[in-house]
Image (tube, helix red, strand yellow):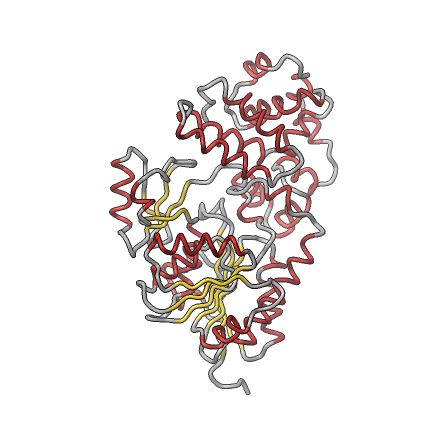
Length: 437
């Protein structure tokens, strides 16, 4: 990975980081501040600043381990940026020492030997790949050593910018052509039918095609999840955890503007934003309503009982999306995990209770923890004998499914280091038309 060409980038990012230190919700504001540079004389540096910000936030635990005992607190923000760029190979070691004289660089350069002395393998893994202990434990415990290392390394890298062509407005081929005409490298996604990949942090949101609803930013794994929902023609779909609405909008396109979709989320501002995005996308069959996380309103309950599909993209620990949202590493704690798992169970039970015979419940997360994925599905099947699993290969076909599912072809499991997508899980359950004997 090449170094920043602008020597002002590291100190500018260090200044931003010092302002949001200790409140990682501020990273979104930091990104917005950098994005605003796109319309200023400094526009050419904005992508470099985003890469630099991503690197230091992603590698924070590793960086701080390397800097332990090597820098004074007041010099830490700038040192963090330089060490993160050195670790990523963007600044050679013989240059980095010239950029900050108040750092004990010999101690920093020796940190790999200090890391070998960390006895606990999970703690050592968490430092090397800059992960919270709960995430490191989940990876080490569930993957072979080589695969764990590849996943840890993949989660450190900025992902490609992945777009979804809105087929209500355009085609994937037309989107690729328009991007290339703008000088942006673009190619079809490997697995998702309407996806397009461009380099990380590509400046695509100034395009008229975007403002006209021609495409949305949506990771390939998320697009695959929408395809797995497979709404029937003119179908009725409940998106029960709509969030920002990426899947909602995709479902509207898959329905070709027909049918009806009810998007539900606890955050009223997200529903307002989704309605505006739906208008821009020409997705006129979307309705949106904000309801508390703890219970559905009568409107949502009634709709759920009529739905052909209920999509439950549940709140989760977000481990699979760390490369896209590196600050999530530091916002979720071990204490949050039981609460998230209980929310997932409650949502699954609620959705299953209102599922009509023959309808499908699609459960998905952007985490890689079995406790939030496979265990939730097996637990629901044990509690509710009216449900049965629908193999993904029966929905997408064997050829497409074999590259994105577990060996049985039943559940979707994708990883950054294997498929190049965010880490994602999805399973499909169907309510039996006749009670099981």
